[in-house]
Image (cartoon, rainbow, N blue to C red; front, side, top):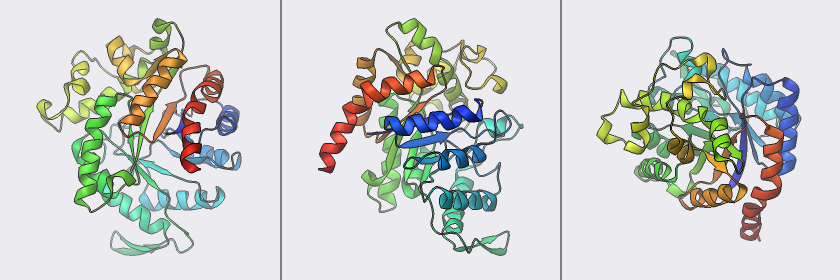
Length: 337
């Protein structure tokens, strides 16, 4: 298993740079950043700074969507950043949540997402596409970055299995991850691909502490974030088509205020139980984190991505650097030798 971080761009520019440097030095291989341009700072200038202040980390948005930015704009952004970073960019992309809903817009359809991925790959490879019936090409682009598709529903996950390099699953529940991965692998097999070639990311916040009450309150906002996607799923699928472990907790959900999106202590999270927090996040002492990460690795997770936005970010990086990552890096070193 490899490790990444995701930053929320409500922190200062200086901290974005400093946390990127610290994470790379600590052994994190991926650096991601949220993309919700109205709620927080625009991520692409920050990704530029992350690129020039790191040497090895793979970088990208977790996640963008093909509706907020025209696909030709997004492709040009990535092709340029790929040159700046010496080909370290990664595209995390989904149907769109906060950056769309805060504007009163709906997410794009799975078919629109799939077409956007095809156009992105062609444009960033210097190939021509038909853009509104006009032949369009980034003749200077040198190669398509890997594409990670974020999703929860069977249709998007199946599509990801057909076309994605990696899949982003926003929770750390091993049972739900197994359910999601089954659709990814089904799509891969239908497309004649090797399912094992598709990377699987589990993305969630963590809090290291012996006091579970304190730990849970630092991350309770996260299942509330996920609930937005669950409500969307329930509008498109019958409840019996989805795991109750994913859907049942949203029945007591009230209104969601995007102005307090991903905010520790937000009223958005009042309906989230301790049991759901424990399933979706990593909380407790270091030993509990290592144990759950090993379970996640066992169900096919190849990257664990820490949503580094609960407070004490520097301390969390230090703890993971010295007490968690070495448990998994030794295995990687052994496999490489």
